[in-house]
View 1 (cartoon, helix red, strand yellow):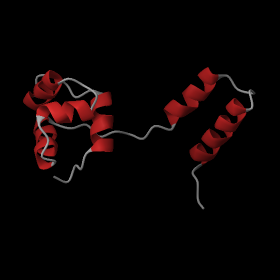
View 2 (cartoon, helix red, strand yellow):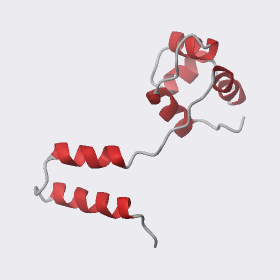
View 3 (tube, helix red, strand yellow):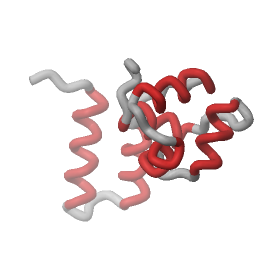
View 4 (cartoon, one colour):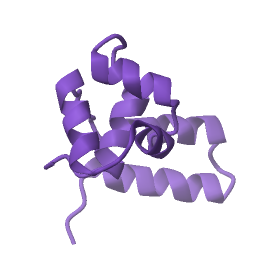
Length: 97
């Protein structure tokens, strides 16, 4: 089993936090370091993902935990696709559509 140094440090930090030897705020900093990089999506890519997954804008928005109007703005290129949208999009939907 091969773990990266960051994964090992993060696991140790979780153990220290559970044992009460590390503050929760410090653990949050470790959690932030372990977040995967997210890919930015263009308006066309967002629309392609939604249509490829046969989702309405309302359903796509619900899965991204945002509003349908935000999805409309993202697809039209009127709003920048923020990190939260990109994270949800890459985690929840097939991007091969």
